[in-house]
Length: 481
Image: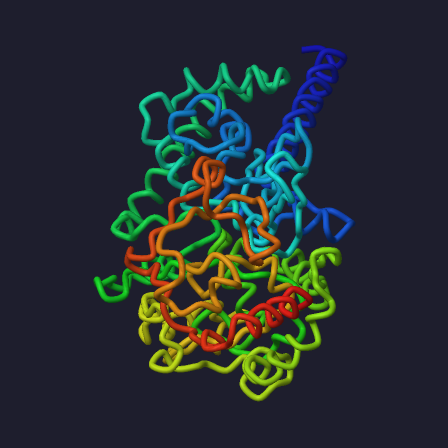
C-alpha cells in the first residue's frame, strides 16, 4: 500500500470513527432524554405541566391519542366525543389534549395525569349554556375509575397490536416514520400492552368495590396493594369525593384528607401525586412545588352570582352560621381541622374504616432516605371539620358526595334524596348544588344510590332542626362563602 493510499485509508477510518461516535452520542442522547412539560404561566403549568406521573406509568402518547377512535365501545355512554365522555375537559374544540394531562419525552412522548385532572371542574348556567372551567374545583364531571377501566379494556383486547394501532397513528401523525414504526411495533406497543395488563391484574382485588362514579376516588386502595397489605371486607370500600385545591395556606397544620389522617399539606400533595401515577423516583419535585406554592394563596376563582343572592337575608343567615356552624368550619375557630368522632358525626363509616392502622404505619415509610419522607400519617376515629371556602362549588356534600345540595343537607337524613344523578354540570342556584334529576341529568350523569355500600347519606344533622325561614336565610349566607 502506498503512503498516499494509506493516508486515505486512515482518513476514511477516522471519518467512520467520528460518524460512529456522533451516531452513538445522538442515540444515547435520544434514549436517555427526559424532558418534562413545563409552562412559564403557573395556571397553564397547573393544567398541563408534568409532575412525574408521565414517566414510569406514562402511556405512549400516540397510542393514547388513537384509543378512543379504535375502541369506542369501551367508553361510557355519556355526552361528548372521545375522552370527553369520561369527563376530561378540553379548553377548545380541536385541542389535542385535555386539562389534567401532561406529555414527557422519555424518550418517546408519554402522557400522564397531573393535579388538574381531579381539581378542575365545570359548571353551566343552563343545558345549552357555555361551560365555565373552574381551576381548583373538584372535578365533579371526571370519572377516574372509568378512565383506567377504559385503558385496561383496550389493552386486553386482541386488537391492541401493531397492525391495528400503527395505521391509526399514521392517520393522526403523518410524520410517523419507518424508524418510529419499527420501534412501536417491536418495543413500544408490546411494553404498553404488558404494562397496562399488569396494572389491571394488580388492582383486580378492588373490583368488588361499588363503582366510583364521576368526582370520586378511592385514594388509598392502591396504596394497600403497593404495600402488599391484605384487603378485607371490612376495609374494602374507601370511595370519597374529590376535594377543592385552593387556599391551602390556612390548612397547614389542620387534619387533612376526609378522615384527618395527616396534618401536613406537603405530605398530602406528594401522596396525591404518587396516587396519580408518579413514583418516588419519578416524582418531579420542582414542578410539584411550583403548583403547591401557587395553591397556597390561590382563592376560589368564581363567586356565587350576586344577582342570585338575597342580600336582605344574608346578615340573618350569618348570625345563625356563627352560632351553629362557625366553631367547626371557620379558619381559626376552635374545632376547625379537628376530627369529630364517628359516633358523634354519624356519617357513612366506610371511608374511615378503609384507612387502617397498618396502612398508616406503611405510609410513613414512603420517601425513606429523601427529605420529604412521610411521618405524619395516623389512624383517626372520625371525619375532619373542613373550611368552607368556595362551598357552593364543592357539591355534592359530605365526604362521599351523598347529599346533592346544601338545601338537602339541612334536611333530616330521611328526607334527603335516596337516588340522584351526579356528574351533570348544570348548576342549581336555588338549592346550591348541581342539578341531579330530570332527563338531561340522567343522560349525562351517574346514578348514585345511597343504599349502596359506602354511599350512605345519614349523619351531619347540624341545622336540620332549624325552622324553614332559618334554613332559608342560612342558605343565603352560605352562598357567600
